[in-house]
Image 1 (tube, rainbow, N blue to C red):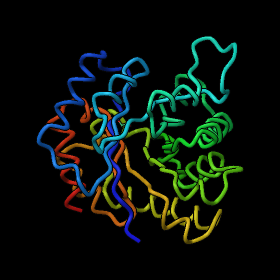
Image 2 (cartoon, rainbow, N blue to C red; image 1 turned 90 degrees about the vertical axis):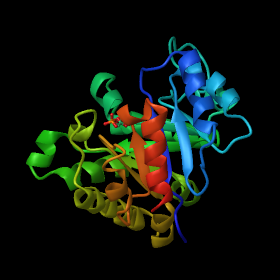
Image 3 (cartoon, rainbow, N blue to C red; image 1 turned 45 degrees about the vertical axis):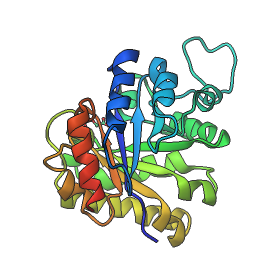
Image 4 (cartoon, rainbow, N blue to C red; image 1 turned 120 degrees about the vertical axis):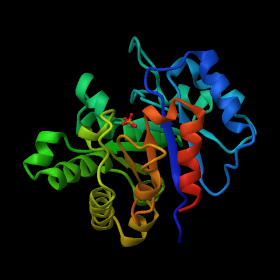
Length: 253
Ligand code: PGA
């Protein structure tokens, strides 16, 4: 069974509501978005407006973060109930910037993954090693620990529908992407790990993106790898033209 490529634009802390809505409208205009799943990940205030601007079309919306409780006295947090209500389909969980600046751990990532699944949303779980870990030869061990932690207690059916983004931390926002064969090696490793944690059938279904300095120039080579099922795009998703070029590269795979 062929896996549909999934291209997600992670805007991080960029774009006001009018800017986000204008991007969404422009993306829909004249673009052939068939054969690939396209996802936009705006900041919280723009989620509802972007969902509305995209309504009736094929592009889905993801939140960039979530808390694990449904409601209550958690000032500043946003629950999966609220994200679902806003029209999200996906939620990015455990992005390296959240692990680095906001203290997220494999355990909190797991709690968030389970909360997201409980509300019929789909997690995009981010994993990836830091430069020092790569240089110490720990890439596979780090990724194994993060994936195993994120999937703890998650059932087979839910796991098969999830998305994993392999994002080496040293490649994020640096202009230094992983070599396509290195991305392939880690994505393959993750797929085999999912096969061991679940079944080979689940491993075949789960989609594994690559993220970290993906651009229109390097997208085709990265997405052409057999175990790279899409991209989580930061900087190059901020302009419609470059994001569309990456979508087109995915359509040609
Ligand atoms: P980048 O970010 O494309 O700007 O490197 C990727 C990400 O953080 O998801």
